Image (cartoon, rainbow, N blue to C red; front, side, top):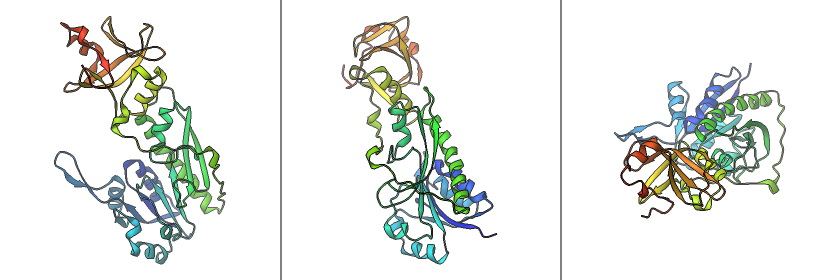
Length: 318
């Protein structure tokens, strides 16, 4: 039985389940894995392999680590010499130039965690949560030079629960990507791929989020938007506001019946309340700069002699 020969491009832990699936598939030979170089990590700042590279090494799969795959002319030659049928890409963090896109027999295919053409870009999971979407999914598209714009060959929908966080949805999509990859391989083996052009009128983008994007501005945001931001930034990079000049991380919150003006802070029955544009929220679990993560009551007790000094703001002012 002739096996499908492929090269796999990926870097973080998110991309490991797909590689594991491909490596164990009886009709697939992973001829090469391409990943980013080792990076310093941890307190000792020791060099560590990316999870995908570590998997390749542990399973004795040929491995190439490079900061720029487009500057590896020998690699393109090796794809042709080794008769690579296709390239599968997931969370690789590098753009592929035209010579690489045209090198494998069947082309290069990217696994993307959104229902394309929605949320093209680096942070589709976060943006789906930020916007309060009820579903997302995994799309596999034949890569072209334009980012995430190729014809779709497979699309699997995944529902999002109301309270789901980035960490939870990330984990579910990590394994859904492997299931979708398995279906994709079956289509390829049966020569049954169909190609659906993306509707350019429905394109939306999901650019990378920065740490400062986690700021909660209660004076100018609705409660639903604040809740969605807390979900979308949990566990990274986290959401925050300020108590005076100190940063206050917010881990969980809930609606509260008390009516406060937008931006108004109130302590009631040992609960930390803040008014938003449309209603009031309790900051249920927080972490003040320099302190441990704790329930709001512990924060309040730390100010037992001066509770009136607890004022939440979005600018770091007294």
